[in-house]
Amino acid sequence: MNEPTTNDGDDAVVASSQQVLTVSALNQAVSRLLERSFPLAWVSGEISNFTKAASGHWYFTLKDSGAQVRAVMFRGRCQYAGFTPREGDKVEVRALVTLYAQRGDYQLNVEAIRRAGVGNLYEAFLQLRDRLNAEGLFDPARKRPLPVFARTIGIVTSPQAAALRDILTTLRRRAPHVRVILYPTPVQGEGAADKVARSIAFASGRAECDVLLVCRGGGSIEDLWSFNDEAVARAIVACAMPVIVGVGHETDFTIADFAADLRAPTPTAAAEMAATPLADWLATLHSHGYLLRRGMERRLSDANQSLDWLSRRLVSPRAYIARERLRLRELQHRLGHATCMPLAEARHLLQRLNGRLTCQKPNLEPHKTRLESLGRRMATEAGHQASLRRQALDGLTAQLELLNPQRTVERGYAIITDAKGRLVRAPKQLKPRGTVTVRLAGGSADVGIASVQDKLD
Image (tube, rainbow, N blue to C red; front, side, top):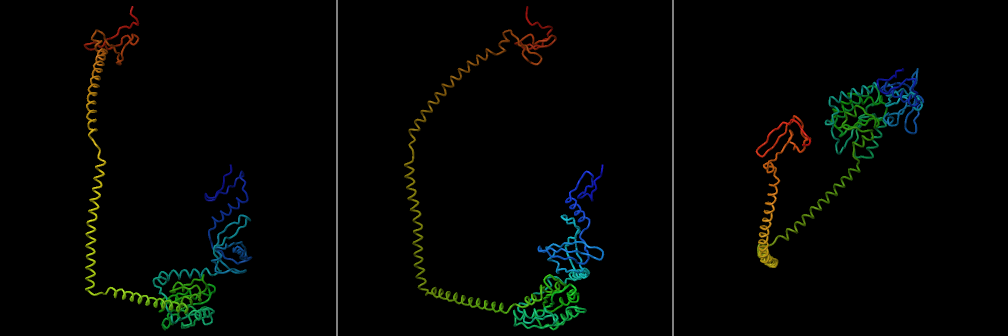
């Protein structure tokens, strides 16, 4: 008998000569075995045969010098990739080894993708982020609110950066009244991080702006690495004015973003956050002016009405006393009327109720006479019935006395019972050498039986 083989007691794959597997069942079992045996892991290789389907899924081949494997990355994961791979790109994917059951193809189900070499940078990014966070540099309670009305805005970025043109265009359109000060510095390349930190410290020392923008455009993680420097983060925290950081695109996060008082998804968004549009200020000013005017008009109107009302109430003491005397007389009259009227109404109601009671009061004399007559008849009838019951009881007592067994015994008869107390009426109820009880008029006696005869000769 063949023994079935199992994998750790889970989904069993039975290798038996008596069992025939379908292709679907075999592929599903192999797929489960692969997923259980190979957990999520990072795999590096070169992109080949990259295809972006209409559904948004990515299909490609991951290869190296000696082998290749098919891979798929579904749309829900692609949107977090941050870039679109191209043929020949060196990448690292975090994937689950599985089997596409419909075709029987072994493939990688990709959960995340990054450019090769980014992994080490990302690990360094996470370590620095956690260390600075533990020191409290990213504490929300430390961060400062932006000024309500910024008159001067400082910008730390490269003069040649496209981000600077976007910022200036946005500020010119939204807030042409705002003064702009540029603190030029390289934002990419060797030594850029130290220069950015010195520019932030220089702007803080001069204290000539209300809010400081630290910005640059998008790029790879290597391009943005100057803003993942500890010196830049500490310079932002130590800055004398609030700092807005707008580095890269919306999906890009740097250490400077966490240290800033406010993070902007893009440099343009940073400019929009720093300055309220002039049209908004004018609209607010007009709205406040309108509300102030309406409030003053309302207060003057209320004061005029109060003055008119008080002037009408202002009368001479003599007229006031005369009016109060009239009012007092009226109240006395109303009090007397209110006191007499309920009493008169109550007296009239009492008289009406007495009349109704007299009309409804019954004549009880005939009923009393009839009740006395019925009482006498009931007493007579009760005596007659008692006499009849007494006579019947005497007759029944005499009959019961005649049927009393004791009287029969007194005439010379006896009552015989067996050992169980049952009456003996026939000889067949007796047994030789048995005993019976004989009850006589004067008592009872136990009698032994020598023999029994059914009939007397």
